[in-house]
Image (tube, rainbow, N blue to C red; front, side, top):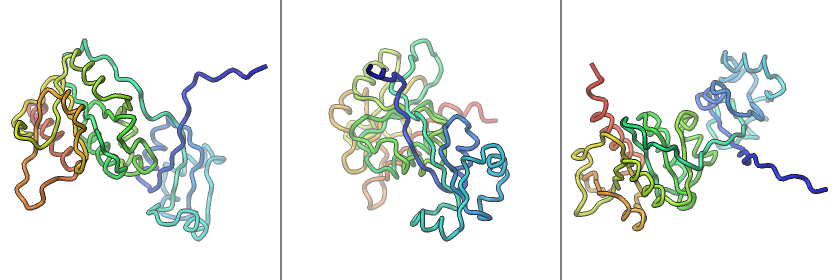
Length: 258
């Protein structure tokens, strides 16, 4: 008799190291922790949250001598702790925003294949309080342990959507009242601070080298750019994202600040 195939989506396994990122995972309590590897009497050892976890789930905590731990995790700034865990961190479809009249901002990231950059973008996006990051299934670094590490726990608090086709997503979002803004250097582009981010918007960014793919860019309603005044002609994409999203915050939330 054949075994029935499970309809449950596969769980992905990841590793995160360093005190801040690991404490975020322990605090989150919605992931399946496979192991907490820790140096006995190291920096992480005395942390109260870790101590409480050790008492509650002693079978998950693996205690190492410093020399053994360093040999096991060479070349990383681990601060004496590494957590291995599994869970479904990404969503494959966006919610329907048709009935929402609130300010909504999504960030679409195209052609960013450097996991360091993608991790920084996720961290910045979460700090800016936007509503989600949209990443293509291809032409992207994907969600890896390196991306999660660089995001410093931001991935736990920000919806991340991985979709087969950005253009189709944009077309659908436009029907729900979104404007799609592509950030690219061109003669038609407006300055990033001269456009309105109120209402429902999708901000689309690409890598420094490749930019946004032409077919994806064609789906944008209009283009914006950040002018350079130095001798270097491009910003790191994570720096550009910071300028864009916090300008959006200035416009949308400035009236809330007393």
